[in-house]
Length: 117
Image (tube, rainbow, N blue to C red; front, side, top):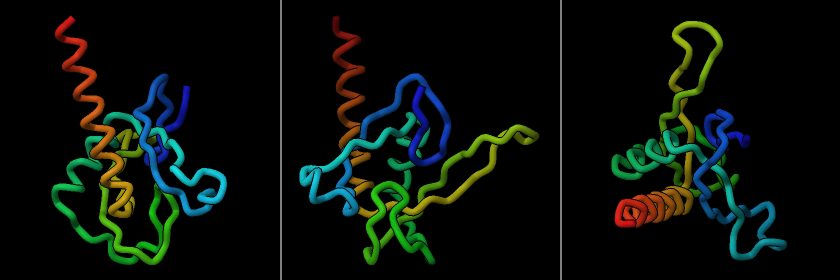
């Protein structure tokens, strides 16, 4: 089990998203992998289409970069009481949104390939 980097939900498998984390750029110049569940990946896709600015965000919630434009991603964070989840706005940079789009395209291609066998 692994936790989603955006909402914290533990899942047996996550979608790997390759991001450029400035905190570890010297050690990993080509990027690092972050795990996101499919629901959050779809939320990132919707956010990329809408491009709503995340006002007041100080850093990207996925890679940690600062001082760039951020976009709002609405995720559902689970709770242990009714209504059992709450909507939370996360902030992602353009680079991470594009990395999520690439992961989504790769997943859809894998699903299509699975249907053809």
